[in-house]
Length: 244
Image 1 (cartoon, rainbow, N blue to C red):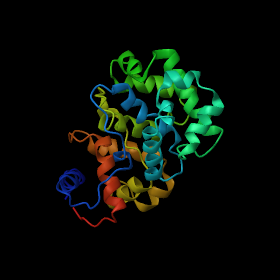
Image 2 (image 1 turned 45 degrees about the horizontal axis):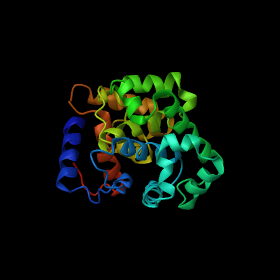
Image 3 (image 1 turned 30 degrees about the vertical axis):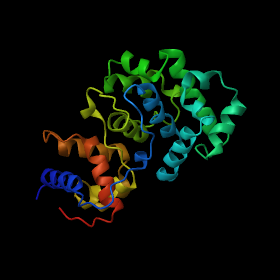
Image 4 (image 1 turned 90 degrees about the vertical axis):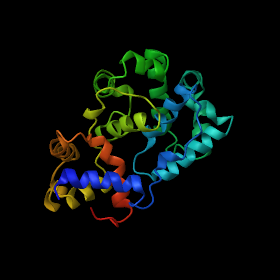
């Protein structure tokens, strides 16, 4: 069975519940209404910038606790964050351990909030300004305003965040097929298991090089690289119990 067929089999297996537990960390989230578009985007954006070398499930559990607390929920309102005293923001972000680093994480959250509020007024404003185009978003976050989006502008997180925007924030980005596969430890293992790379290449190639191999391998298949992220993540996390 070739790679494309194996990917299609894995997609179907995930849909059928045969991959095992398929609860993503981001599934721990508020029940946003259709009118809470700005809140939804902010919720699935700002915590992403703090998702470095930590348990993703604990991160999103902390995000939910922060949202559910009426006092700390203000951290998801970028206009209010822009005017909020730094010490107060630190207190709110540390209360449920949404932020773990009392200086760096607070600065990251504050910088992104101030940037978006100043330049576009809101996250919705940013999406409208780019005409919901992933490639234009990439030009801003990884190009002209890279320093204004600390950590979120990194290749791995930026591409993963873009997938999250579509899957959880309900932002219908155009050109989503250009989102690269965000290569983490689980995706790396799957890449070897599916012969996209060799075990030797897994230790020598950079993450972007591996993403490029996936893009080339899936070209013309109708399967976007980012579409495979969640499938592969579950497949590896559940110990490869299902075999395509």
